[in-house]
Amino acid sequence: MTDLTETLRGIVGNAHMFTEERDTARFRKGFRFGNGPVLAVVEPGNLVEQWRVLKACHAAGVIIIPQASNTGLTGGSTPDGADYDRPIVIVSTSRMAKIHLIEEGRQVVCLPGATLFQLEQALRPLKREPHSVIGSSCLGASVFGGIANNSGGALIRRGPAFTQLTLYARVNETGGIELINHLGVQLGNDPETMLAKLEAGTFSATDIEHPEGRAASDPDYAEHIRKIDAPTPARFNADPRRLYESAGSAGKVMMFAVRLDTFPSDARNAVFYIGTNNPDELTQIRRHILGNFGSLPVAGEYIHRDAFNIAEIYGKDTFIAIEKLGTDRLPRLFSWKAKFDGFISRFGIFPESLGDKLMQAASRLFPQHLPKRMLDYRDKYEHHLLLKMAGDGIEEARAYLGTIFPSADGNFFECTAEEGSKAFLHRFAVAGAAVRYRTMHAQEVSDIVALDIALRRDDRDWVEHLPRQIEEPILHKLYYGHFFCHVFHQDYVVAKGHDPIEIEHKMWQLLDTRGAEYPAEHNVGHLYYAKPDLAAHYRALDPCNCFNPGIGKTSKLYCWGEDQQT
Image (cartoon, rainbow, N blue to C red; front, side, top):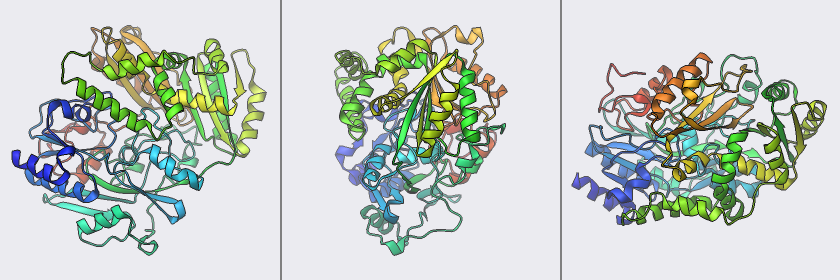
């Protein structure tokens, strides 16, 4: 494979081609799961380079794994083990982070490396917003990752990330590479000319088309979520309603661009902080608001007290970094930390994850970062709901909450602007807290079981009760998520000497009996079997299994096996 590595080096340059184990580690090791050897990691600097890398890898017959931010829970953008039948090349798209505003900002065209941070920043001067903000279970999430995985995000009115307008390449049934332009932008016919034109943004308003029947966001979710007595989840990764070409593709094609709707910013909003020791009170709030309010909430985020407490300590540096540096600088900080860890690992004398340990130590130098009223509610109440309303919904919520609280079990307060901002920032800091806890307590922790589940819309018994034999090996349980969508992230810190995979499989059985779907917002990765609709989608996109084989527990061999499990 020397010829391939030299070809790739010639395309992207020596500084963006990695073959040494220490240099590839931050790309081939997943945020929470997944790791394995690779032939190379390549970082194209533009779309033409990305196309040439794809062609070179395909000609050499290697496995291609596209990777954006590498923030998934299930290892979907990394290898899994060393039992592949061909060498692997990871194509990291993070350098190609351009965003083109079109239709006076009502839509955007995002290139492969664009993040939610960047998109939010680009739209802010126009008083518009993207479909989602930050990342609900990880920080630094990419725009492409949301589309490829049907991720939902925290913003209730907008639903999961979805579009039918994309530019992507696939390997077809005859083994040839096709560049498919369903972006709704006229770019010509020659692939490199098309990609160069798109990269430069030299297309005109007359080149932009509006294909009939193709959407750039989920048009039905606002009504879909209001069906509170439906016996199915509101949204999940394998939902056949939202599997369309690049949407739900999970790296089984090479995506070059996506076109998305944007949304007007709310002129007026308010955050209500609700605490209770009776989860039925939160069920009542959810069902009443979705069933009766004229205005849907902007967001409704749930945090269990145990997650609150772990994040207070192990998410503090993330909280402070976002608050002091801003979301736009955070990806650069994470990149520096990853490079620092990679550099010092060469010497073999420093502890593993030294960057995380230094950041954790530094966080102790800062004073208490959470508002007093939040801390008081933490002490009083087990269950916390952050309810954000806008416009007329503010008065609706204020009046309604005033009729049910204070109660024997709970209460609420309306946040100041600072309290509201810090409450949601703390919720997002929860996302990485379990990973940091594992790093700091490596001698006690076997690993993390990270579940990402969608409960039925009519499920009133949403609080999990684990059997004793499952719960005994668990040191900590962190529950948090998108309460009104009934999508929960559940992190279990498993004690040394116990098998996290075995525990997770037992949990799957419990979820199946409840009619839950999983994963909800991340792809099936290497942890879950792809259900029939999703497996069929993968086969249609990648009939020769050139991209990311093994995802969805599918065959790692070159051709799809007839006996593969789905």
